Length: 320
Image 1 (tube, rainbow, N blue to C red):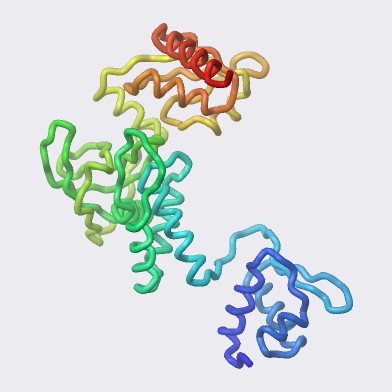
Image 2 (tube, rainbow, N blue to C red):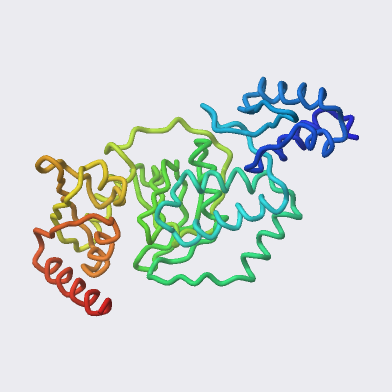
């Protein structure tokens, strides 16, 4: 019998977070208490914001349902390790969709993981090889979690940086946002030594160190970190402009394309147009546009038009 009420509540919450309905009698047996105590504990959880739903019947049942807010979760050892490994894998490969929010979640989780579980996570990751490929550089998840923590906490970040030409330097920054382009992670930050905004490829960062010094966030020159990164890449690379018309509303296309490619603009009743610039190979852009899962027509440049035509023919032949 569990006489410690907080411990019993945590155990009850852990059971309820399993996606099933629990009869009151089974919960009482699991916890070693009476059904009346179970009912009181359910009321305590509701007072804490957990949406526990009760069903009528001979035995009655309880289940945790979706509420208006996200209450704290209780994870057992295996669940915590599984989530940490999954987030680390996504963060380390700059998987599109695993953005800054996911990295922040990883930072929070690893901060509270006991050392024994942290060791299990590291061991499991070191012993596995992901079946992925591409030209995106791999990044140590620890680098991303340190950066995400300083972004969220408005804390100055110091790190070593290797530029594209091989020049190495030490940087002291006020980190603003982490941005994933699908192949790479970038840090948008204010460089205190150069007194200006900069973008840094995270795979070229080493020895990130949170200084502990807080700062008041500055206003970014452009509306969003993704837009600032897109313009920064355009200035540094030999880029080409492109225009693509999609047979879907702007909000649908915006949800399926990375923001740095450009902002969809309405075009007609049910279509939209994306205008942007990139230094990526036309082959990669063609594939990325196709991954949106929406019919589209490339208007320019001619090289991208020809690439899409060849790619379409190749895929048609491959499908018989």
